[in-house]
Image (cartoon, rainbow, N blue to C red; front, side):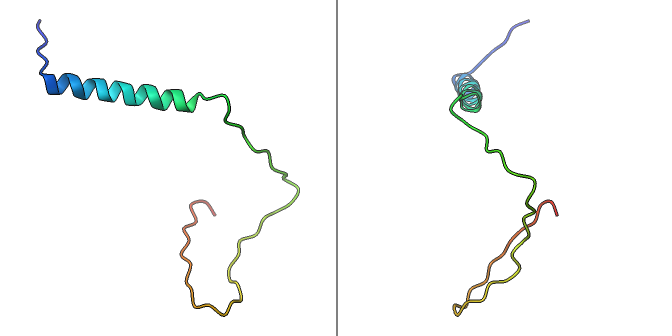
Length: 64
């Protein structure tokens, strides 16, 4: 069985492998820290704000 690779196919594979390697490296950076939050206080959504400016805000709630 023979595998035939063109120059473009080899470049595509190399770019894909390097991209995955960089993403894995970024995901494993030790300097990334998590933020702990307090569960004793419940945050409520902001439905409206009194202002003189005429502005509209669009939000998307993924998990209500």
